Image (tube, rainbow, N blue to C red):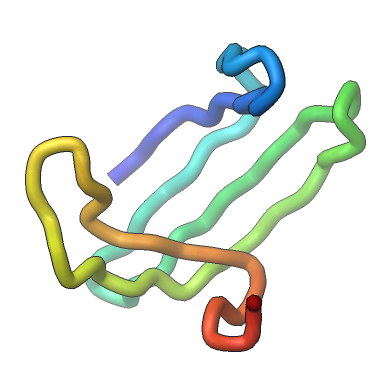
Length: 74
């Protein structure tokens, strides 16, 4: 699965396009992201482990991926 990227500004609640893309590989449960947004000091590539959400449905995520350990974040 392939997707484009947007940057969300929580203060203005505006989404703007960002150069980059993401690819979800369900066979390996990985999400590959490449971001080229030098205006916001983000030029990176990540491969993240994907975790399926327990409660899915309309307007709810199917999976979550993070670049930090969510079990350790408080």
